[in-house]
Length: 125
Image 1: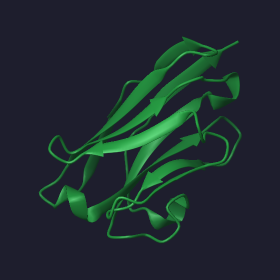
Image 2: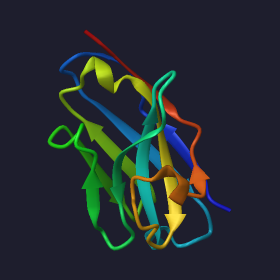
Image 3: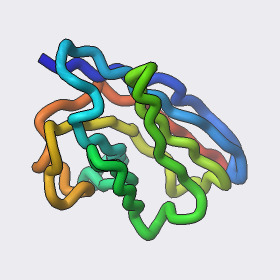
């Protein structure tokens, strides 16, 4: 069984930065999983933010390109999301997700079987 635990959320002013972490806990091989960050604001659908495939391919949503960076540390079994130049519209609950192998569309939430509990990010203007 895979467990994901996010950390690093918080409140920041527009233009600021935050880094989210997602610890992967499982006896499974971490490197065999594709992982992604999603976000969901109140009253809105869950949105894919960034994904990293098991072979290293990375994709970003257009709304965060150039501002967010996804990365993974295979030794620490941890996924990261560095968020710079934050905007009020980035305010949401951020969740990490994992799926064994290559789930196809990395930013489609239905492709993922495992989810963390979420970390709140609030950006004030």
